[in-house]
Image (cartoon, rainbow, N blue to C red; front, top):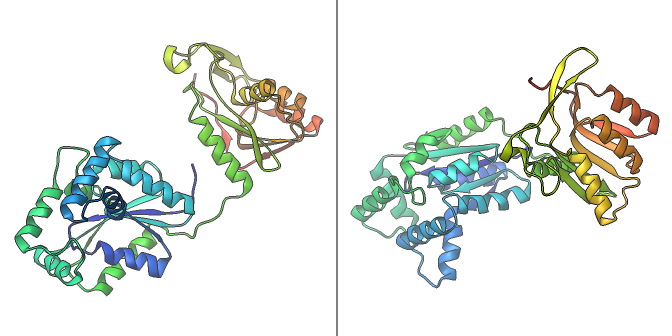
Length: 349
């Protein structure tokens, strides 16, 4: 899924300055803030417990064990993504969280560290509800959270190693701000660009494609009218037949006009065909609608599109051998558009 937003994860040692970076990104850059710590604190209060360092660790680990190592971070990512704005997810503490966030795209992990005694002095000065501890307790808490072989438990040391950028915060707040500003320039911070309707529905077609059951060419299709989704479809075997992903492909060679030979899987139904079949099964009229798909529809799909009354076809890219489909659409008065100018190259033999 494409997006113009940046999501920054913040990890680091206790009292190193994670909050200072967060405040800067919120106040100076307009980032939206989400905190793993706050998420866990909400759950602690829901359970009727006291919020402290022990319950934060115990409940956080419990949530990860019950759901997944990435559960909390994924929940916060979904909240952040829904805003469409640049966002921060603070207090990333497990490798599962790092890996889950990184798989989403446009994610950068910031880590911050400082001298231990300096950090202890900072937490005693900020006087939060979890910071009234002795220096020995502070050290013990940190050691407990720094390393773990359990993917559900905190492993700050490993998270710091995985960070895209590490900030040593032994200087002034202004020094830290300058370091953050330099990194923001490197990652090409951009203002969020709201997708057009075509980009929006094409992104949905990409999501539909994730259900495809033939890894030869995973694609999805969305058919829309008056900006309302009528039906979707993805590449896969006919209902009740084995999937290519399970039993393999059934190939047929095709010789193109330029003499190039490609192999196509004939076991599967194309995304456009499945979407149109679903509409027929449900009695949904497609007259005057718009179809979104990954590449120029093949000849068979083009004929079905023409006959069911679809008036506009939007593709991500042009297929390398699409002249016949393009000609048929032109003759039928169907508007054919491409999001990108790139041409999909020949499949490997």
